Length: 467
Image (cartoon, rainbow, N blue to C red):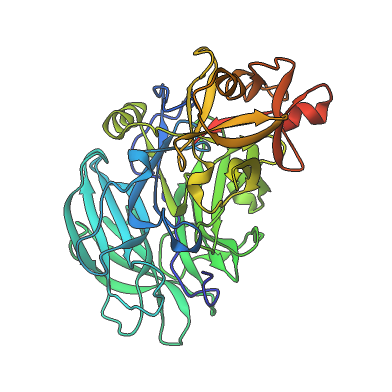
């Protein structure tokens, strides 16, 4: 379901916990194998989000979900992509969660008080949790932001304002002129707020404010304007001091900006996602935040958590990454991304194996358990999550999803040997067990096993095993 207008629903962004001290060097990467994740060896990232699947069906959940990453681009959903906290007051659901590390090193989680897509619902409150480690959540409460009537409190996020000795909470509401502006209310404890006022108003609708504070003496505010992501900046955090400066970026109708600083380089990423349920995340990058210009990131390099919407990304330590994985576990399933069509994933449709663009409906048709090969345990077989009695096997060289009949022939047809990716050795390719000169590849988006010799065929036969 699309939003009825450019500003008819809340969105999400990030504040990268800049008040917290986090080491700036990071190494290591996710081990994208079946149900496993490597330990982090340096500063990492956590993403908070809610989930919406296509047509708001199975896979839609308005609770707090978490994923972790060592590189800020590839994400490991926690708790099998189920929520780790759920609101019990207000609308009994959340959108647009925001995670911030406070001055004392603990975390606070904020979120819009809204379940589903009832954009006409008004609320002066937001959801709040406290957490020492993002493994337990305490002190759940509703926090009142303002006294305005007939308006909303969308997409809250917070920042530390050292000059005031208080936290500012940004959120989107309709002002007296009738258009959306970015408001701020101040707090010391996230239990009461004071001095609600307009933080940024260019004279027309803007929502989804996201701040990066104190970058070479400048503060950067990114927001959604007319279906694009736009930046403003100021040398202070005073309401009304920000001026627009950047070139807009978008991929279709885009909202929910998230600014993220790399731990290992001068790179900044700007994330945004599309409006539709099961919105698609896109990322841009720059090495100079002051330039206001962005370059699209190759989609091979990043993968959003399944069904994720309107996220927040915060810096965490390697130990916090490891503790979160230990607490919630890695997924018991994988997704396989196409190398030369990185917006497409391996799925079954009508029991035929193919690659289709994300989002996929039903989404579970793109989830696989990579189990020991049925004919050779050193190989791998692809067990369907949505149809667990069925496996991908080749038949007349075409891949289809069939019930395991227990025969030797089926076991051999359904067994493959994982190799270094033929087009990129950091990815994976899969060689047929009983036709060892043939590899799984796509042709016309349909999966089959073929001999591979040309560069284009090698690209067709290369996949990323992720989540």
